[in-house]
Length: 414
Image 1 (cartoon, helix red, strand yellow):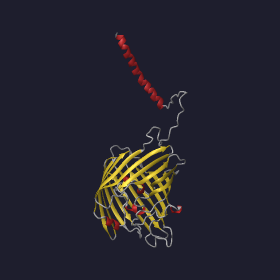
Image 2 (image 1 turned 180 degrees about the vertical axis):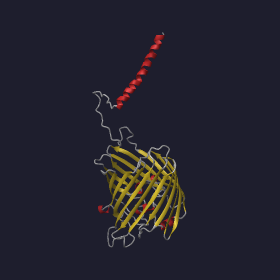
Image 3 (image 1 turned 180 degrees about the horizontal axis):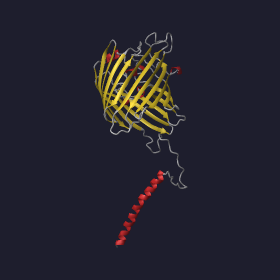
Image 4 (image 1 turned 60 degrees about the vertical axis):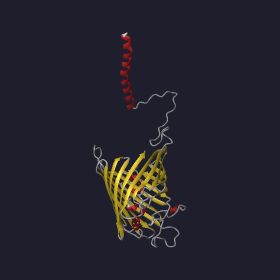
């Protein structure tokens, strides 16, 4: 009786003792790259898709979706009339200058997915200041072209500069730099177009971008000269063209440097005097925009419990208006320092009108921000800015900004 009871337990014990050896054997086979034996009647193996492609059954009809909203509570030391007097129109995703108090600065709806082994797609819809829905970007990007080539088509932000490429939630300040709306337009340099880029065979990371856009004039027209958008879409000569060279270096294990060289040309939208407007011409004057951007980042690598970092960005652009017209310049420099795990302090200096011209008078701006980020999905920010210039009253603004991200949002470039 005892033997009959002990036999099943003995067999179970032997099976349990054999299991680890079988598991170890399987692990060793996997580590050695052993290939499983395929029965003769099994279907032929399918070549694996590239990493960015959606595999069968992986939510084929469900792209990654997210909602990001930025709410503000604002105070204006001066009313909108003083901002108009400064000839510095706000960017499209800046808080509204028409009223104080609570506001919804922007709501962004994002959809992104790998379409197949050859294409990826993304759509970004925004509702700035609850004023109606806009298509900020909607484009396709190739993933399998040879010779380090990539193509992009749709409606998207130009690669010109650092700030122009960034959506609102990537900003370290509540309002964009002053030069953005002056040189790139209220919504930045974006619109229907195509882009070709190539990773150059150099000892460092260098990418060349070539772009062409069909840009419309602002509607309604602004109070300042818009750099591009005056040629219309019917004549190919009226397209806006851009070329960008981005270069990246790892300076040390803890520091990196990125340098961008930018150039663009297109038809001027608006004319303000005889110097800018071509006499007797039927086409708008052609403008030339050139400049550079430099970004330095420092953050200790592989150091536990270290929450310190620095990002310093500087951009400067020159605009030549028409044939023999004025050359004007504008730019900014900003630094953001991480002082604790969840706290960041930033400062920015804007300078417009160096050199100054008929369409770009001298203006200066100072901005400061204090950001508390409980996680990568939420941020709370205090922001203050003062704008001044010759013969205009200084304008002061202050905001408390709340930013929350819901859902899966794809990683952004460097």
